[in-house]
Amino acid sequence: MKDSIFNNLLAKAKLDTGNDLETVGFTAKLNQYEMSFYAEMVTGHNVTIEDFGHNYGSSWNQMEPTQEQRLALQLLMNETVEKLEVQEDQPELEYCDPYTEFGVSESMFFNQNQF
Image 1: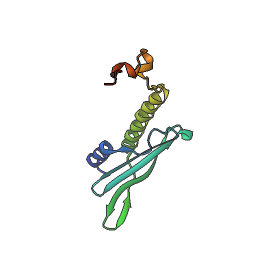
Image 2: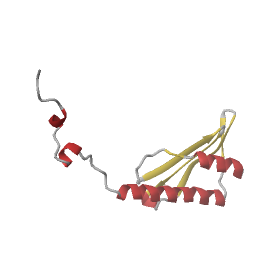
Image 3: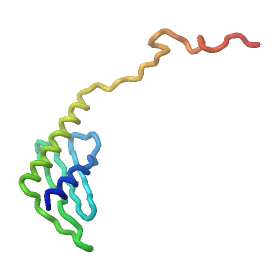
Image 4: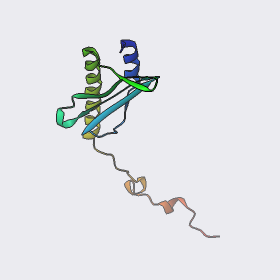
């Protein structure tokens, strides 16, 4: 695959597995070109390429990425895994009710006098 097409595909790659660190996967599509790849925690997040090629009419032409393209995919995977690990390490912020936090009652804001 030409580097220009690969770079455009890489820029369009979308994380499609959410915040899960067990399996991290990407897909990208540009016209008739497609690629999908993933990495699993058990393999140390080494990239496994599922689809890498293009549709030619009604048939699929699977291509083999170059070494530089494989390194670019692995770099994207490593950066994404690091971001997901940072998100996982951050504690979830709980909702803080300002009424109970500051000792204020909702009834203080309503007219208590019934006319």
